[in-house]
Length: 439
Image (cartoon, rainbow, N blue to C red; front, side):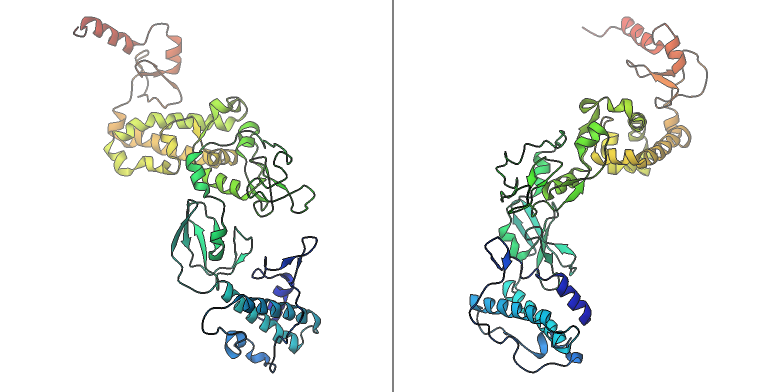
């Protein structure tokens, strides 16, 4: 990293993530550095040359090197004091001066030393279980992750961190014992139903002016902490539990067919993400009028009903089983089980037109196998017994009607124009009368 980049990074993050939370609170809750009577000389010794600056990090000089045995609290406090002195000195020195460059390098060195004391390198387990979280040790060295507990950057080069394999909660190794939030995946397993009221707010006073999750004090004025509302739960949260993440709200989709992303708290964001593909929405019970206003829903429902009629052909056809045709819907398994359950992802894809295109293509492939490619499936077709004319009929054809009693297939016009009973039902009734079952 070049000097200008290091200096710019320092000026943008006047309070380094390593130092965050270590300062003492001032009278108004502001963060102020700890006060000490004496300020010892921070960086004794001669100045290093700029060409040796990169190699100087932890090699040429050894400020506060680790003695035999463990560190005590005074060592950490001394490092914090040295860091504060260095930060002030950098701001006071002339821009791009040699002394300023040297002190930027030394500041980085001291922060690495401080982090080494706080988070010593030791053998961490690869898997840890806590509050139903299953934390897996990460090997990535990316610095673009943020700790969900302390809200600071995870410096993968020098810090150990974990990710929950269930809800993807990320945190430093040193923050794990401070976690109070259980794994959201357990909530999905025990409570697989959405909140279907639109932003069911109860009021900040009913929350006793505390965060709905961590119970920290909050207010609409932002003192001592800003109250942020979650559009999914309707409750208010602190800035630690609510990062202004956005998500599509199921209640707004079902009642208003609205897909605009709204601000939600961290736990709601994870819950909605894990529930996204779960088919838990029975639209014809929750809001049956939606089918009167959204034409795409009617189209999708008809395609799903046709696929359910095609399913018996495939599960009795050897060629279809070998070709694994039904696996084309493996990402939406509920489409081959029923025609009335939807996931939130289904509704989002319907609104964008993506589901209609993909499902129409699959429908065409299925129909082609039954009607054209497979002789066994063709042999299971029907001839209209009312007019005894036309091609072989199948129950999923758009111009046919199916008898509800015997599942015989007829031309739609013939079925509704004929005033007599279904010929197949009549034959079955006559056969039962001639050959009554044994008493």
